Amino acid sequence: MRYPRELIEEIRMQNDIVAVISQYVPLKQKGSSYFGLCPFHHEKTPSFSVNSEKQFYYCFGCGASGNVYGFLMEMENMSFPEAVQELAQRANISLPEPDQSAQTLAAERLKSRLMEIHKIAGRFYYDCLQSDAGTYARSYMQKRQMLPNVARKFGIGYAPDNRHALYDHLLQQNYSIEDMVQSGLVIPDKSGNGYHDRFRGRLMFPIFDVQSRVIAFGGRILDSGEPKYLNSPETPIFSKSRNLYGLHLAKATRSKELILVEGYMDMFSLYQAGFHNVVASLGTAFNQEHARTLKKYADSVILLYDSDDAGTNAALRAIDVLVQNGLRVRVTQVPDGKDPDEFIKQNGAKAFSKLLVDAVHYISFQIACIQRKYDNHIPEHRVRFATEAAAVLSKLESDIERNVYTTEVSRMTGVAENALQSEIKKQRQKEDASFQKEAEQRRMRLQRQYGQTEEAEKGVLDAQKTLLYFSANHKYIYQALKQVLSKEDFPTPVYADAFDAIATLWEEEDHVFVAQLISFFEDAPSQRRVTEIFTTRALDDETYDLSKGINEAVVLLKRTNIDRKIAHSTTAEEIQAWLEEKRKLEALHITI
Image 1 (cartoon, rainbow, N blue to C red):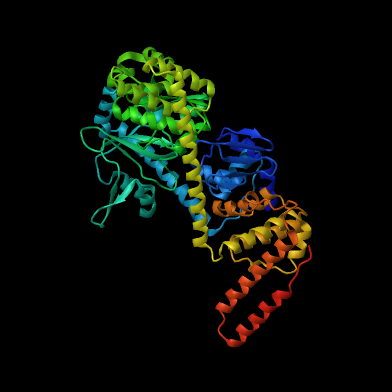
Image 2: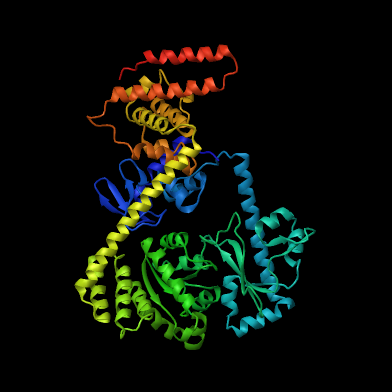
């Protein structure tokens, strides 16, 4: 899928990278750059930088880098064309029909067919619920106090206890078996001789994307049996790690505070009771991508998980993820081990409203969870409580918050505040050292990865970067280099393409803007490689011998290219000719 390069550049220029990234990552300005916690790896100290002048981002911890397109591609798991479309919509720029490759066109058509299949399946399940086959399911819903009008809004349906009900219905609609299997709604028999429905004898909860399109289903068994809930598998249109149940409805409230619950019925009951700013995770642990999705629509979250041990542990894990992504977090739990669905049915909306009002700051919740493990009458327990609490407080960046909660823990444990502050300081230093070690290990892994996948050794990689860096920053250097270098002199394919792109920009635009150069590359790994050329180099200073550096880099690349050709030569004459070319390199000198 291709759009004109001029249009891609116009869209990029209309989407300031700081403004776009700020929707996902809280940034603080330092000079012409902005810094925040990297959204692509776990860190405590901000190492993620956004250059407002050059319009690219770079993480000094994990090496993630690119322009505004690259960020969206990494953050939202988008293709390059999808990122173009998203940013064009953001800037109110109309897009022409793009040129599409056969592969891209096939993928788009498959997604379209899968969307249609899910829409038809949703209608089929809904009709089954209203039919005689759905009598028992309707009775179950009545017992669970699920109001028909709300169930209609959610698209609740019923999958008959029949192995081929949906399969036969889709065949009648002329869908291929291959597409049915791709949808995840139909699966092959173990015998390999046929196919059957994934969902049978279950109350069906359609899962919608934020555009209110059905992309998957969750099915609840009506009687005893396992699993109690069964979800659609991952498909080209559905990812459990990115989608949240009910988000399309919560989004419509425009509330900046969302209630996060664990299950379908919790979300349904809260919505039915009038709390429409509620979403649920989809039977999987709450993760970074879930938090990033929430961050698009909310500033704060009230966590409402079950009050049993499993729910408490899930809430503690979710807190860390939410806080890392810049969301304010409060926590509440229903008493007596009940889940939210049970509580609201027994106590009503007013009592539930009080639970929300009484939700506590996540630090208070974490400390209360630690306190429950220990008996403060035992000195050893007080020590362990204070130590664990100090570890929690060490993660707070606000000095004021840290001091307030330090005072509270001191009161609870009888440990002096200065002793707690000393322990917190030690914990922060330990975490900082751990982060630095982890960051260095990531950088080394990255270098090893490049070394394993590229023909060139490190010296040749550095030579390529040096030449690309200076040819992009100085036209006179590019003009000198184009007389002696060609694309084939660059052994690393992405760098060879970058040299071509730099030539195009100098010839057509008379300048090379880094963010524009990055847009020539439509995959995230290539964007990262090109961005690194300009983020990890500092050669434009008085101590660098420019002429010597350029000449040595050119000779190294050309010698490497000749050595490669000698290795692939099949005759003595060819080898002799290339050896002669290699000798000529001794006299090569570029005047800079």
